[in-house]
Length: 317
Ligand code: PGA
Image (tube, rainbow, N blue to C red; front, top):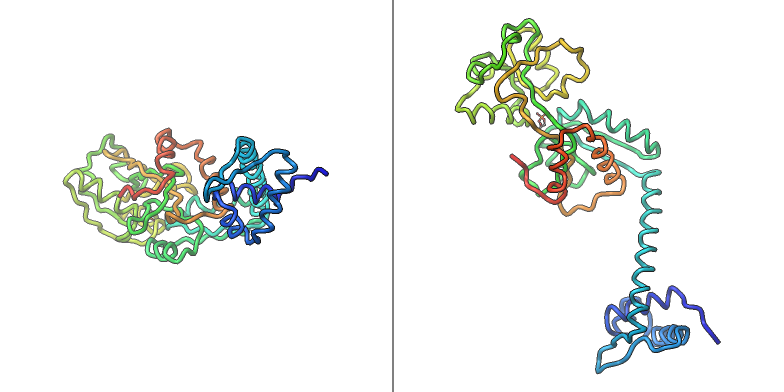
């Protein structure tokens, strides 16, 4: 009488083919040896030809066995893909996404999260906007799925994917005398009263680095811990500053003068970051893909950076 091949038999056969041993296959599958032998016999009967041969202690595959092993691997791979795609759909129907964004990322992160939420209304999203110290603490404790940062941390090994341009521009009040000038030198700019972000701010570091590279130093007249406060101070005529152009999104054109200055805009990027070695969730992966789809308008430079940035990398400093 002909039997039907069952998945159980294929599973047992796959384990024997892979491990080269009935004993190890039975251990791996938590089955008794007689069960394994009996199922293999049934499978052999169904096929109508020997699948394995015993050579010394080793179990080797016959030619028919090798062909079946290949077919079995393909069947299981297809099933794995199917199971994964079902899990993905389930995950995207009602998963969780926990994001953390550094200060300045608050100008664009909520908008992107909102758009993603519209695409996947069942996903429960949360966003915390915070400083660098808390980002590091959260990464160490695995609290959030993804981090939106301007500077991938050097302290922790991370996977950082550039998702968007982040140009830093020099801003002054519209009636500032420098607003009409062309090609302002850094040397001239360094003599202005500067309003700076707090120590530890990625924006501040980028500005200081540019001046240092030219052997210049700027002495802040005011130090303020928020982009919004800095904008107020600029409009109050207290000095100039340089901020991410994202900090201007909600302003009318012309509300600030963007100075035409040497070395500016400083070309930086926003990164989506997670700790290296961490397997990110289906939802986090979908959000990352969404972010990369959004950066269609980003410069070719950002796109070119993508492949090299998909693996663990160190911070660009
Ligand atoms: P911020 O921005 O630290 O200046 O807020 C993040 C970054 O640009 O690294």
